[in-house]
Amino acid sequence: MRWNILPKISEEKIAILSKELGVDRNIAILLGQRGIETFEDAKRFFRPSLDELHDPFLMQDMQAAVVRIEKAIENQENILIYGDYDVDGTTSVALMSSYLKTYYPNIATYIPDRYDEGYGISYQGIDFASDNDFSLIIALDCGVKAIEKVAYATDKKIDFIICDHHRPGDEIPKAIAVLDPKREDCNYPYKELCGCGVGFKLIQALASRRGQTIEDLLLYLDLVATAIGADIVPITGENRVLAHFGLKVINSNPRTGYKAILKQVKKTNLTITDVVFIIGPRINAAGRMKHGNHAVTLLVETDINKAAIWAAEIEQFNQDRREADKRITEEALTQITETGEEKRMTTVVYDEDWHKGVIGIVASRLTETYYRPTLVFTKSGERLAASARSVKGFDVYNALQECSEYIEQFGGHMYAAGLTLFEKDYENFKAKFEEVVAKTIDPKLLKPELPIALEIDLADITPKFYRILKQFAPFGPGNRQPVFMTKNLKDTGYGKCVGADKKHLRVTIKQGNSNQFVAIGFGLGEKKDIACTNKPFKAAYVIDENEWQGVVNLQLRLKDIQE
Image 1: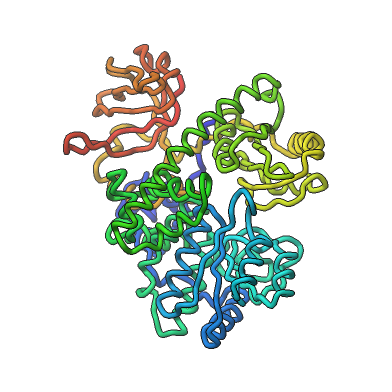
Image 2: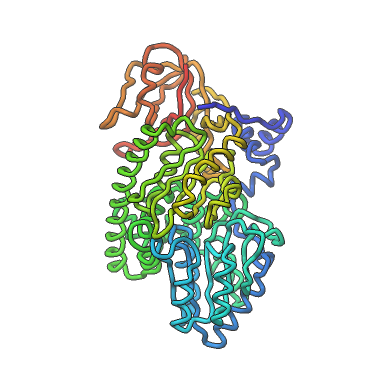
């Protein structure tokens, strides 16, 4: 790993911030790195307020969307809530449908089949709407590039309202409204909402017309927080507020479906990381292994006994997903080794029998292993489908755009995308993608970077210091959990490799005469020779709590160690 010490604000600003807030120098530095330089900045950061949420009518087309929904309700039209099959899409559909159903009954939901229909709006979904007398479709987490499909719906006398957060193409679909803060003509102040976040802004606008306030919508923020975490959007600005209050709902009064999930895993007091790794994968597993409808059904269920049945089913989907993920990752790693792929600037692998539902996870695993822009392909009907993942600092979406002559369709973000192409174009695409990446990527990006917030001594780690650090949460992109670096560490003689496969490192360390700390390094077993030879070493770590038999102690979670 490349250790990169993050820049600090000026010493003058550090001193002022430290004095105004009554915090030590290290806390002032961490705040400054987040753009917090005044007391008011710090107040907003540490005490997120619902008052900071922007007026939803600042979003382009919001007025048109609200008017069309109100007209549909007035005319007793059937409304179809349509969303993608991943976490962001299914939580969006659950949010929008459950809100509208509180005062209007003619609501149904539709999640496309990952295998028969693929990502986004489908002709099958529009035909379903036409056959069942739906005259309005509200699409969530998809649709901003569905030019032809919206036109097809228009021909069938079906209107579209699109709530999306992906980058639009050169043309916007001719829908009644296209709510997307990434539209060039959209002046909405915050651009990084997830799909569920855009959906929430729509129900916020609808609620305001009905005399409701933000307080009436708090119960929906558990879904928004889940989507924010799972979709890896920045936890800054408005997202930080939504995630903060959404976590409160999850931990104090979770919806019935969440209660059923958490009862199975016996987990309480969730952080955003817990949401990402406990709730997110289970919701996702439904769409990956069976159908996203199962996730929506669980998320809107109000009977705990029924929810328990749905949660058990989804737990089995998640187990199946884990097994497929492990097997396909092993097969992909073997393919890379046998074909010499590790010598390339990109990783592109294909097997027609790989499960389409897990290729995105496998792409992430391969990126972690080889740290290259990565695509994992499988057969999907008459085409090949792929999930793309990138490395920090490289825009894989732009790279795919450069290869568009060989792609049937694609969409996504800077770091994650999906695409389809015809099998005859696979080799040409693979060569072109390698060429584009090799020409445009900075070689240093091919080695993972470990951003270090600052160097501290073990003596700086006190209960008070950690209590303040905890208030920096929720952590995520744009507000990462601080990684610290400490030099001249020594193991006290109890260091060892742990775990069934001995891949993890557990050491008890000290620095001079400081207090000792237990440090655990997951996947760092191979560094035992550095840490356990009675020679000084340096470590990069985050500070965590560890509870054992009712006793809570601070511990260090190692990210890397060096001599």
